[in-house]
Length: 145
Image (cartoon, rainbow, N blue to C red; front, side, top):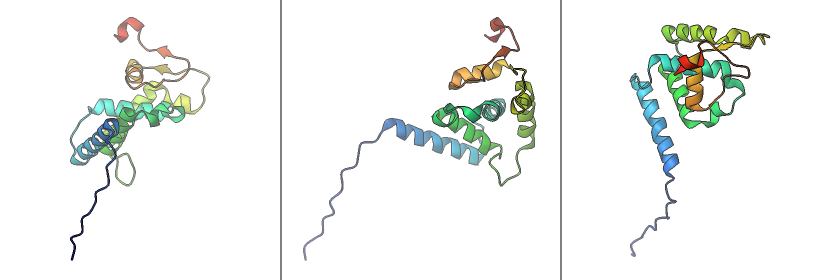
């Protein structure tokens, strides 16, 4: 009887960007499941607030891998994905931040432009999204630095 030799198929080259993306996704999923705080509480709440207030009409919230992973981590870390009781402290903080951003006014199509806080502009610059059309700052531009 002749031995059977299995010929291995040539594996396609590994794409470093995709490999890094998979690693990052696994890292954040593991951290959220283990209860390890990778991103600070305040930044998680700010990201989720921005996602709720400005994320509806912007592709960057879906296409930006870093932003997407961070929002998913925050939602998973504070049990905001559904099926579980959400973290009360996180929900209360997100609601405070939404009031600060004028989230209720945006949802009701108010004529008055919401005042955008400095932290939201900093997140927008870091992740590459916009905070709506007409922008009025809560602080003077020199105080933002």
